[in-house]
Image (cartoon, rainbow over all chains, first blue to last red; front, side, top):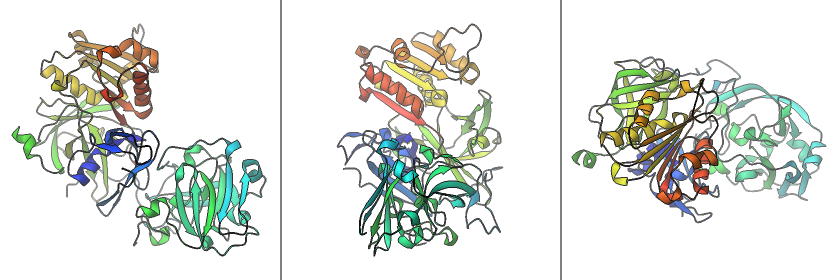
Length: 76
Length: 200
Length: 249
């Protein structure tokens, strides 16, 4: 398990700007924090970003044929 | 495209092997992949349940589960991240044993686990000797990072279907996509037809 | 600054290896000349991508070890036992080769002079790399921001930038503490155990000083250090963390 810094490049590629300092509010526990402080699981079929407090899935990034698909429904 | 002088892949793909699906390489390691933190549930609190569309829900405690007829089995496993591991040895309870005597019209299952992971399969893919709930690997209790105390093992499909930390099976008449399926992975996941992503 | 304003989307660039410097048995610094490099902030990293002739690609992130004030982009890479990329970078890559990278990346784990201090830098293993960039930046700017460094490594041989850091220790304003967790050389005067609350309490600024803390290293190290800092009364918002670990599958 790493943190949001590990996917800084992927997120910048997707969003066009640095996202590590961007704040995300967890839809599970309601706490906010920078993306850099999220718990990131990279050794998986995709990247899973979880709240560091309650483990709620904040985002999932998958890659297929050089195209990223990102689901952000865990972020309020 | 820039080519890095002197760099080559560490694991060559297996060509011409009838045991290795297309696009896979064989490893002697046992990589640990996870979508979340490793759950730690004491055995005294563990249970395995059958629920959903069946005559009567069933549940086993750890001790009751251990008392069920068990099988040793050796299978090849294939992960969608391209590694395959041959002749992995497990001990577990066949899903056929768990479903013995169950009356159901369901055609689908949704597997649920500690930590919230889910995966879906056709009922026929976890029956007929094709799936087990395994609690030993190579003769030792299954380690938490590999899915212990118990995980599903369904070797004929990509290994994301072999859900770690399994706590039960829900029988359903409709098909509900599980975790990776709902994020774009293939609904069925046959490694021999290289069904990695939806639409493959 | 014109260069910063022109930065567009993150694109892959080619750098040329100017030098490869062994730092320890398992670690080397790769000095790169990257034309049109936009400049980085201390603490940022790059993504490196290797491509084999059959098209196979592998990608990893490495912190930039050089300061923004320097011309070259330096990456210090630790060769991991099963590392597909690190064993190429430390072992195969040589002067004159080209390396594909993109960056600089990261807006959270960065320090510049204007952010002030006092600084508390805590490094575990190769976590020293981005912190060293911060120290070099501070030095280049002749900054008066007080800084303390706590560096944890397994042994003396595994200390990266050993001479440079002890040189900084001699200079006013940089307080360096080292803990060697597995083995210590004869006559060792520093710490000899894994970091814990007591050790952190001894070497860290008191919470009343409100230091800006940067903690970098393996996940378990970072969490232990961060928990200790919070338990000593430091504000979580003034603690920035970066976890290192293998990402190859």
